[in-house]
Length: 110
Length: 117
Image (cartoon, rainbow over all chains, first blue to last red; front, top):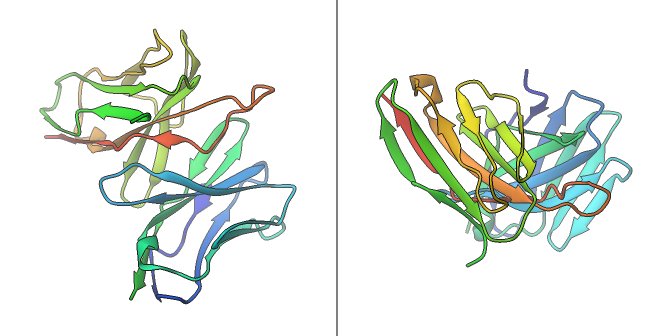
């Protein structure tokens, strides 16, 4: 069973606009959440994380929001740049067990 | 450059063959793990290790063996390859950030694309 779900396989946005990537989870025991970014032929790279005791974490153009009651997190990228085009994976952790979503392919058009 | 090195980058195996995927890191990370990535499934944990001599199973361990004789190396062995093991394999490493908590901002290798025919 997939405990972490990214229901949008792809997203396309215009350069300079906001990109919003969404992630839902089913296991209420998850207490730490992360976003990874992956370019073709490379391994994923860590982007940003959030603890379950917070509802927002910001790092430059990237902000992650956590809604525990809805079991939902999102990644906002503002402003979006063509170099942000990649596959984004969300991940959730419970007791050293990290589960990944299937990924969302973001395309930022110039 | 410091990081996680995986070899080979590509491999084609026949059903029933065995092989070892190599993973090495030079960051003195205690934690190492192997994931497989399949379309529509995200990354799934195969095996992991929290230090030399210590290994444990992840979500999808069947058909794979691991060992951790040194801090730097964490090879993944396929004993008898099956078409269902066709996938992209990623090795990842990380460190403990106090009180035994793993830093989940893993460093990943660039992957091994394995095809079993």
